[in-house]
Image (cartoon, rainbow, N blue to C red; front, side, top):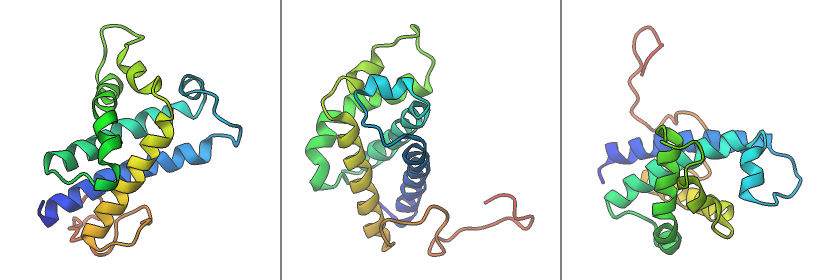
Length: 154
């Protein structure tokens, strides 16, 4: 993976991180009984988007055979369920209660496992770019970002 591709996957991971932080701030400290309960809660919308965005990061790293070894087994187990979940989130399904959600939702400790994948992907990407981890959310100065003269677009 070249530096430009690393920066691209970093941006994608940051988008997932922003949504994850929204989830972290939105849910109560009450224990989550099940994934099904979580999705029915007001915090569920953040989990749905976070998981969908995170899959694009995992998919990109996998394409370049760059999945960190520390999570290789978890990614192997969760890859297809997370992919189907992402597809169910970002593509209109033929049935409103698509089974694509259940593959991931029904897995034991899925939220903890997805969180670990998220953290380790972020740690790996930051290490490759020589960025601190955890990064702040935003555009780090180290990136070669071109801002338009009107300061409205990158």
